[in-house]
Image (cartoon, rainbow, N blue to C red; front, side):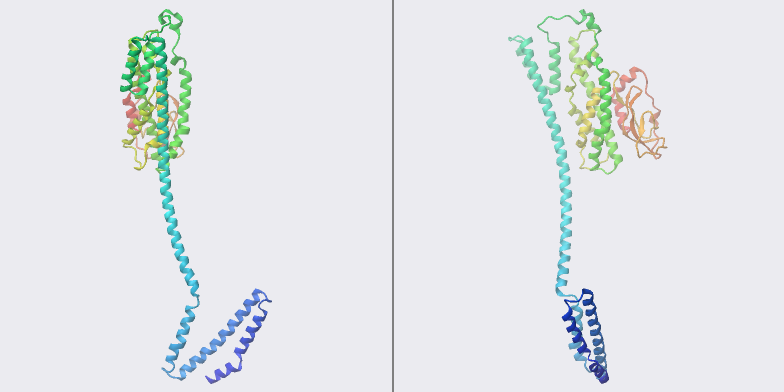
Length: 457
C-alpha cells in the first residue's frame, strides 16, 4: 500500500490536474466550444484515474486492518458520500420541475377532457336549437298563411256585402253565417265555404245562362286547359325533391343515425306516407267541394270537372300542416323504422311538406300521377328503377328502395332508385299485375293500395 501511495505522490497527479484546470480557465473564452469540451473530458479522465488509484489504496488499507477494522469509517464517511453522489446526480430543482411538469400535464389532460365533453354537449344543444328553430319557422309560415287567408276572406266578404246583399236582412244573415263558421271550422274550410258562397250568390248585373251560349258549352275548364303545363311542372318538381330535399333530409338524419340504409329507408317511407296522406286529403277536400257545389251546379261541365277546376284554382286551401302531422304520426309507429330516441321526424318536415304539396297537386291531373307499387325482394325492373351506386349489379332482387318511381297508369314517368343484393329475400308480390284499364288507373287513389305499398317497403 505504501508503494502505491508513493507512486501516486511521485506522479504529481494533483499538480497536473491543477495546472490543466488553470490553463483551461485562462483560455476558456479564447478557444472554441469543441476544444472546451475536449479539455473538460480530459480533466474528467484524469480525475477518474486519480479516483481509481485512491480506491485501490482504500481497498488495500481496509484489507490490512482485517475483517472488522475501518467498518465504522466506511459506514460514516464513504457510504453516505456515495449515496449523496448518486442522489445528487440530478439536482433537486430538476426533480421539482419534473414533478410540476407531470402535475401540469395531468391537469391539462383533465381540462381537455372536460372541454371536449362541454363541446359535445354544446353541439347537441345547438342541433336541438336548430331543430326547434326550423319548427318555429314552419309554425310562423303557417300562421302568416292563415292570417293572410283570413284577411283575404274578410275583404272578399266586405266587397260581397256591398255589391250583393241588401242592408236590411242580407248582411245580418251573412255575418251570422260567418260567426257560426268561425266557431266550428278551420280557416281553410271556412275560406272554401266563403268562396263557394260567393260563386253561388246572384250577381246584380244581368248575365247570360251558360246553356244559352254555344261558345261557352265548347270551352274547356281551366284545369283541362292547364293540364299539360301542370303535368310538366309537377314532374320536374318531383325530380327536384329527389335531387335537393332528399339530400338535405339525408344529411340531417346522418347526424344522428350512422346506418345509411336505415336513413334511406326512413326517407323512402316518408315519401310514400306523404303521397298516401295527400291523396286522402284530396279525396276529402273534393267531397266537400262536390257537396257544396251540388245544389246549385249547372252548366255543360260535369260536377266532377267543376270540383276539380275549383281545386286547381284554390290549391292554397289545402291544409298541408295537417298532412305533415299525419305523416309524422304514421312514421312514429312504423315497425320498419329503428332510430335513436332523441331523433324527431320533425327534422325532415321540409321534405314531407313539399312532397305532400306535390302529391296533392298531382291528383288534379287527368290522369293522376301516383307512386309505383313496391315491395322488398321484388325482381329488379330496369324500366322502373336505376340501381344505387353500392348495389350488386348482377343481383336480380331488390334489397330495399331508395326513391319511388312516378307512374301514370302503367307508364313510368320518372324512374326510382333501388339497391339490389343477392342476399335480398324473394317476395311473391311481384307476381301481382296492375290493370291497364282507365278505371283501374282511376282507382289508384284507393287508400288500401297505398297502405299495402307502405308496409311492403
